[in-house]
Image (cartoon, rainbow over all chains, first blue to last red; front, side, top):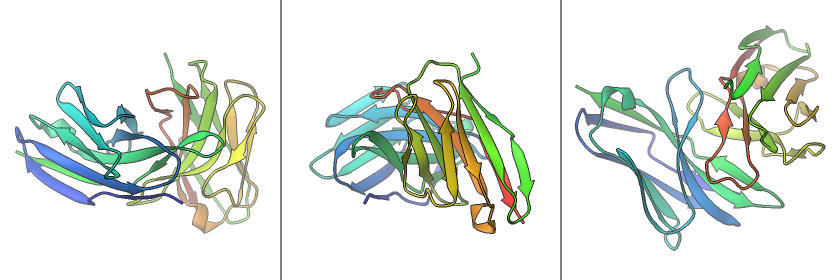
Length: 111
Length: 113
């Protein structure tokens, strides 16, 4: 099966930088994705890492280390609108490629 | 561009009733998925359809059936609803090997009493 671990909650102040970690155990690993979900909303895709290293998209960056089964999402210049839950998801190949999601990290951004 | 459309948005069922959740996408994606999300938890895969005409079980398929009606539509049926199926249900679609992730619908909030 699949196992993903991420912190349940993180608090940071507006303008700061926050890192949300994700460790995983799975077979057939293809890559790691991150999704954002505001309360009552649908998950929205943020990033995908198939290879080791850092991918940057504006204020958000995502990192993957396949050898350590570890990744993180880095949010810079935090804004109040970044308050949401963030999910890591592993892409695996078992007859077909599917994503399995972690339980999510609730980010609280304070003024 | 509507993306992924789910109906209904809210539903209350009595134990033992049946219902079908509808999902349609207009992005010409091959693959579609049904997930459920329980409070404080991540999304768990119920069923998926790799392409039109195929369906397969995910992590938590018991109590559900699906139909991939055509390339656009993928429905989820609860034959005899149970309180344990109270959840938020999300439909998603993607290209089969896309690196751009899933596009999710806005969800169906289902309560079984």
